[in-house]
Image (cartoon, rainbow, N blue to C red; front, side, top):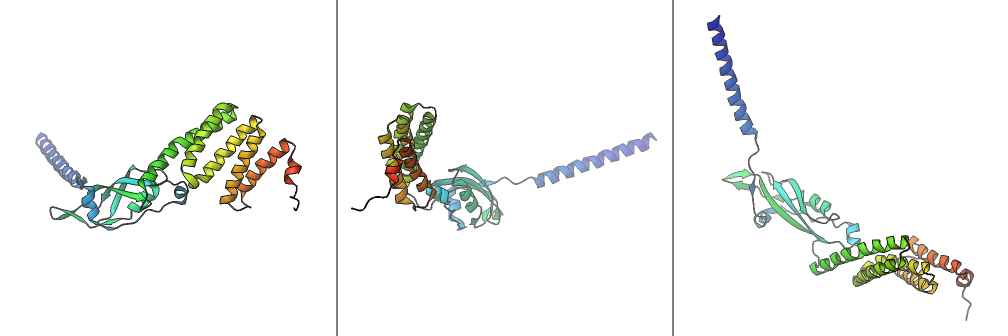
Length: 254
């Protein structure tokens, strides 16, 4: 019995050893091979299908431009297998990644055999843009929005001196960017008019409300909601000052 049992234990041990050796070999064969890193300029030379990312209307309307940079893995057939975002504006990166996934490369060979590679890519959205203008836009974004929001909050809490100060800084930042920021200029002018209104400076408020209305009318149709809103601001001011009938009556012929 002992001999048989010893033989059985020995056989089981041998079988287990064989299983472990086989499993180890299987696990080693199943592990993904290490990816080779290829320089960006070298990989770019192997790019055979390039898709330009879409320039989203919202990003265009906000004058947001820039570059999306990503780390990609290219499979043995030359397809982009994965994309990892490294940098890029939140309004640009999604379309940048979507386009990069459609790129196609010549298969890379290492040691004479097709291989998966890792590399970095960068794409401009839109395809061409003025980098100096991008710098000016970044400055605008950094100055305008914090001051506009701070001014709006100060107006809400009736801290009118701070509100006016912050809003004037925001207005200056928007005006530096010119006509492309007409809507932002309208918004901050309207807030400044509200400051004047709360200060009982009705003439100052009227002048600013008219300025905002003129900008809306320059860039929009007369039946658009924003134009109606600007007109309503003036109408409310005239009602508050008892001048509504005078201002809304038809102009007499000369």
